[in-house]
Picture 1 (tube, rainbow, N blue to C red):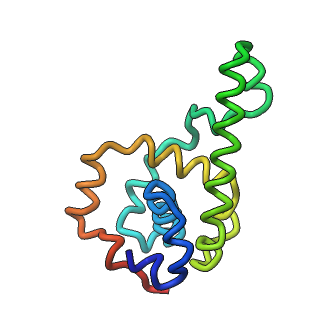
Picture 2 (picture 1 turned 90 degrees about the vertical axis):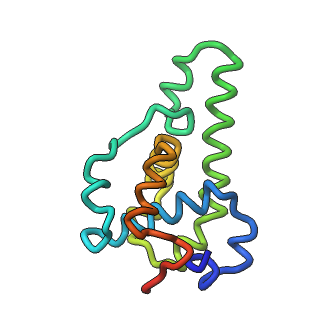
Picture 3 (picture 1 turned 135 degrees about the horizontal axis):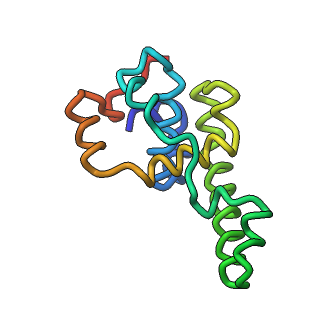
Length: 135
């Protein structure tokens, strides 16, 4: 993946495919109207009900110990994955709002929500992250 290899080979080796996809999604959003996906991005959900997005109030409302533990673990895991990808996101010079944990959670939720046919549609539009980088 040239997008990441041009910037941080060691970082790419430590990232999971979903982390790479999440970074690529944020990178594409950072392009704004210059992105061929911009019209699509305008229709994405602004929030997702995934455990990693739960705050303390939502977590405690789960009431069952195991459910609370699972929500806390999801947040911890998401923060760890965000921290792993953070250096790469800074090297890509993403705008500060896209570097936040909140943006990471949103992008992760978006990536989880995407259907395989959307990814195929992106490929059909000529969007291949293997050949991208213009910064």
